[in-house]
Image: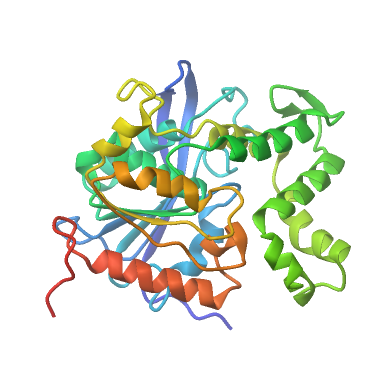
Length: 349
């Protein structure tokens, strides 16, 4: 039987009204779902923002919160805002007029309002994110450099790489080819055959070649087909295709410099970041390569690159089934959160 957490939690819906979007247009009746874990300090200086990743909700990310886990809610006030398009916050599945593109910057703007208007928080001790959550962490550090002390970027990058976009284009094209597709990422009914194909494309990218070669897919299944049917298809079949489409478009457009502030100059956007940035790519990730973070590193003021040594591919960044990868993340995060955000030194004992 699962024990109740020993820290307070709260969840709600933050009403944003009409949200002006980065690319023009608006998101009407915008809503941001959220959940918090732990106690906000009187000085509001113990806040970790933990945004969601692709197709994830705050429920699915809770496993890494708690004493002895990656984020400790007995020490930190952890706030998880649900990304637009995930089915809880404003999404095509619950919003009749959902715009063609809601960017990562739009998500950050909404989250910033949630922090300020609902909690009175104006500065973050850390933004921690995995995958698309990591892209949001990077955007936070670049768009509001004076408001973020630390950023932990797990399996993410400052700009979605071309090779990553090829993967996303395959997902989008699969959904667009479905007979149920009406155009613009909207569907007459759920495209079950397309979602089955979608899951199989994803499975080939999320786990590394080494992972399959080691036969780890057979730990929970009797065959490859059984693995794909049991481990990958149900997760995506439970999502609405329109939501998956919208978030894939957000992912594809990810770029911390694609705004009026930096005018597409990625190096300038990276150099403007004041936060201490911990870059943690997985050595076998096929989406966000170590080389992407290596190219970013020289332009960051205060940063460190710690690749996760793993065969678990992209999933090493959310290692609910890989104790070794979880331990690596836990130790690195504890070290990073223990460092002074100004000088980077370890705290005195």
